[in-house]
Length: 71
Image (cartoon, rainbow, N blue to C red; front, side):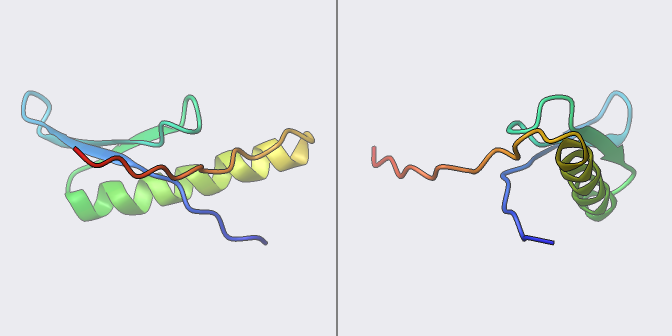
């Protein structure tokens, strides 16, 4: 299988005492974990499942276009 790189966002939610993880490039691709490391593992698994699902039905997998901004 081809390797992909996607940006992910992991944030701590103190109200729920959980780390929330999402992949903004793949709508609906999100998960959580009790630790940062667990959230990272879980989002990696979630991304893999979304990619496999998209490929199975013939949908394209988005490709990240990196842009550098200097401020």
